[in-house]
Length: 114
Length: 110
Image (tube, helix red, strand yellow):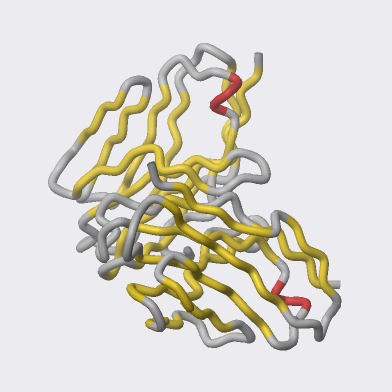
């Protein structure tokens, strides 16, 4: 069966520090991968998605970047965090490119920038 | 998210039915979804409905879709305390992209 792992679960970082969040998927190949952010009391915002190694689409211009160095690995990064980067970050994958059957989400990383 | 609207809170007693409502804006959405988020966890896909359907039933869950009014609802029969969570509706608006609502927090009282 397929599983998706995200780490760390929680993170407290000072303003201006770098960020690296990692997501890996097991049990499938060539998954479509996504990074979402959930701000407090709000819905989810799509940040990045990837349909293959090295292929990244950015949805929202911001302080963050994403990379996919391996088929089942998706990394969210920042060189210098801002206070506004605080939130709950969720990685997800879909079997099909159209995500017709929805996503499978990881357990999330709660990031607090202080 | 801002195009998908949900009420923020719903409180019901254990054993009652819960109905969570959602309105969306894109009439061309082909798939609509309900997700459940338990505290501190990611979102779990509960069910989805194709836009050519009016209703879908899956055990205790019933999804109703009114395309004319762009209204989606999730009914949970015989609500249990384990159903307490935040429920998100989502519409697929473009290929693999979704708008999510801000979530409805369901509180089930024993």
